[in-house]
Amino acid sequence: MPAYSDVEVGTQIPAQQFTVQRHNLVMYCGASGDFNVIHWNERIATAVGLPNVIAHGMFTMAEAGRVVTDWVGDPGAVLSYGVRFSKPVPVPDDDQGTVLTVSGVVEDKLDGNRVRIGLTATIGEDTKVLMAARAVVRLP
Image (cartoon, rainbow, N blue to C red; front, side, top):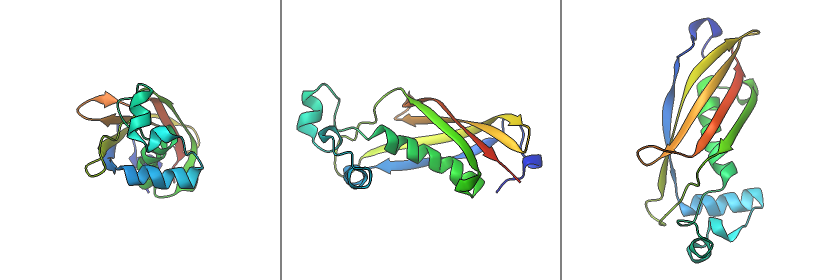
């Protein structure tokens, strides 16, 4: 876990890549209870105007949150976390899936050993799938 004294505004949080495959979405359906067919049936997803099967928004949010918890080393250090969904994460085939890239930066140092982290989550070259993604964590 990084120490508050070692972190400055602009400190980069190591980027991570997550391969999202359809089997991940099916497992998430079972874990979350969200069995909406747009998350596992390509025919239905495209019939309602989606580019393909899409990942659950909360699945995407959880993967982005992993970047924060991996960096701080303690999920209990996360005091708040929120995002706005800006684009869906299509998962076009069963084998390759989609690569979700998440990076972060310390945006502000707050009182009480807290820092605010801004996250960027993209698919492809530069398609941002989350907006206003921020977490506040307490550091030692």
